Image (cartoon, rainbow, N blue to C red; front, top):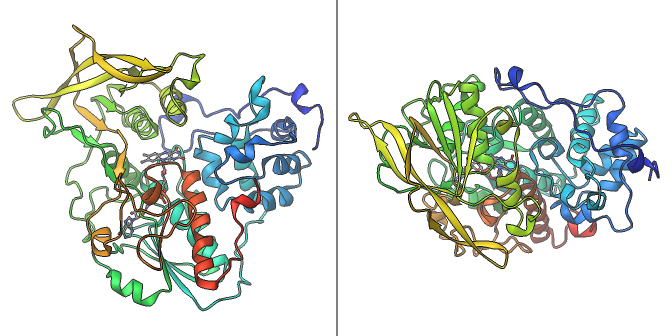
Length: 495
Ligand code: FAD
């Protein structure tokens, strides 16, 4: 531990964000790095607890007190080595993780917790700046081949680990660029895409092959992949959005959040948002713009918040966000179990940029004009009953029905499960009761020999940190299957 009294000398401080007035004019990241010696002061707050709960709080089992100490001593090589031993992509989690490690920080019992997420981001940025992130070129090859289907954080983590273990890895991605939701879901103001490209360049130099516009089960034959590879990892994400089938749903002006966000990420990348790849038949033929419109975002989580930030940048007339659940009382965080409460309670950078938020509200009807365009939404307030301190049932509040003007409604109510046509249909793999691929969290093996699954496609919609964790653990199981034992470390080794 670097400084015994650090937590007594310094309070938690985050780097200054770019001003709202400045950042809503572009899609660049809203966060800055620390100036001066602030990072070292923040790292010195770590108490190096006897039992560091932050290890358990982190789905990757990151060695947090160890890298905090290295940062305090400004030993960037050591900090990077420690961090990258458990996390393949700290540049992603350091930007967009809700940081469950910080909720588990012992200092958090009576002081604000250590800024672990920021420290992680600064270590990896420093490592890239100092040239410490180098492709591993001395990998001993095993002669085994693995196909990874899907290039989101789960697929990329599995591919990195399997490649490190010496297997020849090919990633198949149906989109025109790798990254999954990091690329075409999460807006650039949270994660600029050069951050992904910088990492992909390392993976390519290490020998990972990418096949793009390759939709397995549609334009790439699954049987060919099975024949050519010793194992297959399914990491296709959870992509089917939850719909809102109330009266008026077919009006023009109602879209799924991902239709809106994907178009904008393509625009920022300088691509045509309407370009229709041959393999995707259900792509929209109209541009979705919030400019000058009353926008209502239905859904209070991260996806909804990203729609708020994007609508502000488009120049919407007004932005309102709905959440079905009630606001938990400030002193009662157990009111809703994690991760629900931070998701809907959290004030994100997008909310700071301007939006009205309504909790405990339901959409009853979409109302259109004579041309079939959305013009308003009929809503009703909800009264929640609770059981054992948790909301369990709701009733509509009599007399609270009203219409709100709305020309653009964005549905951000989560995702149900992976797409079940194409790949899953063709495979005939077993699904769990929620429609995700059935494979246990310990084994990652599906009902079909030599086929494994990880990330949102297996666990259902989740977080980037869980996707990376699942990709790593799944890779270890595949390595064991191929070699009889694995050279890859399990996170259980750290906690
Ligand atoms: P995905 O990222 O969904 O990647 C799956 C990939 O597989 C996709 O590229 C898809 O095109 C490809 N694919 C699917 N089927 C096939 C096929 N048959 N052939 C070839 N390729 C295929 N999490 C956070 O931690 N922090 C956040 O701030 C955050 N914000 C979010 C914002 C939005 C808008 C959304 C939608 C999610 C957000 N999440 C966030 C959740 C997070 O992005 C996901 O949990 C994570 O990306 C899941 O990773 P994955 O690799 O399992 O799947």
